[in-house]
Amino acid sequence: MHQVSVCGRFFLSFILCGASACCAADTEFTVLAYNVENLFDLDGIAIYQDYIQDEPDDPFSYGRRKLLTKLQNIAAVLKTVNAGLGPELILFQELEADFTPQSSVEDLATFLDQHRALSVAQMLTSDWRPEYAGLPAQAWLLKALSDAGLVGYSVTVSPSKGVDAGIAHTNALFSRFPIQEVQRHALRQARDILEVTLVVAAHPLTVYVNHWKSGASSPSSEPIRAQNAKVLRALIDARLAADPMADIIIGGDLNSHYNQSILYPGVETGINDVLGSQGNELAIREPSGIDLYNLWFELPPEQRYSEVWRGRRGSLMHLLVTRGLYDQSGVSYVDGSFTPLIIPRLNADLLGRPLKWRFASETGGGATDHFPVAARFTVRSGRAGQFVALENPSVGDDALDFELPLGYQTGMQLPLRDAADLAQLADAELGPFVGRLYRVEARVLKVRPMTLEVAGERWSGYAPDPAVYAQLQEIKGAKSPTAMVVTLGIRKGKRQFVVEGLE
Image (cartoon, rainbow, N blue to C red):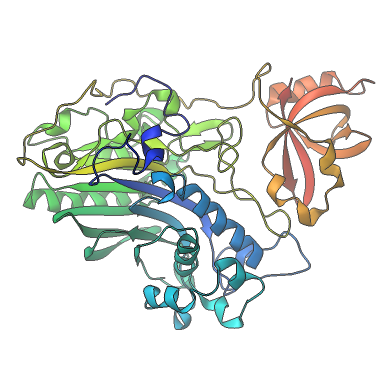
């Protein structure tokens, strides 16, 4: 269903309602794809320099308190789903691959039982033990979710290929449904695809967890994503050859926009040209030809985003479905239920941009640079091949040929706090405030390097938008302060105000 209202921009009400009357039957469940942005463990072995060691005297290095912040923020986001119970299926990206397998946790259920007397916060602070350093990211994450009341998950994860392979992350599936079969498929310069078949109310459901080669805005890396897509396409083809009505969900971070082939004409794109992602909801009912529907087409074009990069919206996170999820038998997609999870002040700023992870202070701050995407599914007992009726089905003819901007515009009415008091905070206290929007009364003392005066304190400044930079040049040296909307940022360990615009 192609929605025409704006109710989906932040969070659709039926996903929040969980077991309340606004949801349908008990057979309904939520599938969510979530790139958690570098959820690294504490073993000190990491491909990314920022995560290699914990330096207590440096408030900007990775350590136990930062891991705790990440875990708590992930759990808080997931608790907004299903009235606090969380999704039934979670497709995770960017858990760190475990580079110390000698300390891996083979039985996560036993691990939870052994540590039931301690919270994850206690384990990472007052009750820390040296042996905890070797615990893999998935163990920490499962423990944090359990502490938050998000329970009942079985975990499937791809093993590390070793540091020399240069692949820092792995994919994982957290499932409340029985896992019948797991296969892992290697990709070129990307994380293994997880192919997992589950049993949902006695019906098979196959889920593919993906994280393709990065660089969506770089056509030079598209051939690698095309190879990633060919591997996935072959797996799907094999399933559909055996059963054209197989129930299949493809999800994760494909590092490709839903309209990649339109944005980059003349380039063979992995997502559109190879995989076959498209937006005609009825076309996949045909017994041959098109067989995948991208759920981004459930939303109006302005709502199709899970990232904001350089001021423009992107749609790198995906959920795609096969025709079997539209018939009356087995697992079925709940029409119109797809949405990104955009939760102001939790994982989004007041403009609807992701609060990406920041290393600032002892605790760090922010959530991730990707919004999760979620959809509802149900189980039907009708006839296979008999399709459900759709209201206002998408025809897929409204894909944009440009990336929509998203940023502050003069005159916007936002409930902003004043930033003057931030000057009183020590560096170790900045984490919860970095990346958030504020209002300031500031004088522009210099533009190279940009220096602002706020309540008698000097601040480094930065204006990424050339138009805003030009406005600041015009008011440089003015005796009276000007009202500005800013984001608190950190650059090279120094605090600064990123000027979003003038009020």
